[in-house]
Image (cartoon, rainbow, N blue to C red):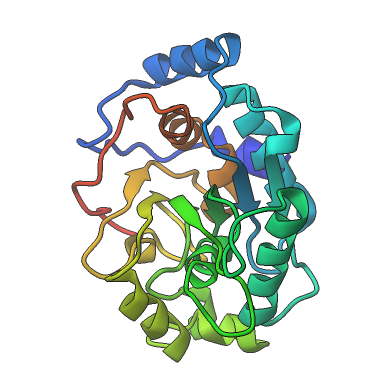
Length: 254
C-alpha cells in the first residue's frame, strides 16, 4: 500500500528512450487489461531479499491482469527466511519443477522470469548449470531494481551471506558476470531513479544499461513492482508485442 502511495509522488525526469507520455501509458494499461494475450511460456516471479510474500504476489497479480495469463501459468517464489543465495536459488528451481513438471533431467521447462531486486540475481544464478541441481531454463529474464553491480545498502548493512553477495565486487556477482557472456536468455533490466537501497546506476550488469523511469520521492526501491511505466513495457514484452522503451541512455543519477 505504501509503495503504491509513494509511487504516485514522483520526481520529474524524462527518459528519452521511453518517449511514451504518462497518458499513453495509462491508456495502454487499460487496453491490455481489456484485451488478453496470454504469454507463450509460464512466468516465474522471484521475490527480493527478505521481502514479504505479498510483494511478489502483487507483481504476479498485475501481470496476470495485464496479459490474461491463466493463474496456474504464473507463480511467485519467496524466501523470506533464507539468508543464502544458494538456498534461494534451490527453492526457485524446486518451485518451478513442482508447478510445471517436465523438462530434461538437468533443466526445468522453459520459463520467463521476473526478478524483483535480489530475485533478478537469483534468476541469473538459477540459469547457470551447476552440479547437484537442475538448471532453470530461462528464455527471458526481466529484472526490477536488481543490484547487478551491488547494492548501496549492502555497503553498510550486510547481516548474512545473501546480503554479502550483493556487496559491490563480491565473488557471487563476479561469477554471475562471467556466466552472462555465454547466457542463452534475453535480459531486460528496469530501474527507478531515487533508489536509495540499490541505486539506479547499479541495476544492470557491466556493459549494460537499465530502462529507467522517474522514481517516487521516497520508497523508490519498494515501488518498482507497482510502477505503471515499468509494468506496461514489461507486459508488452511478455505478450510478444513491441515494447515502448529500449535500453539506451544511462540513468542520470541513482
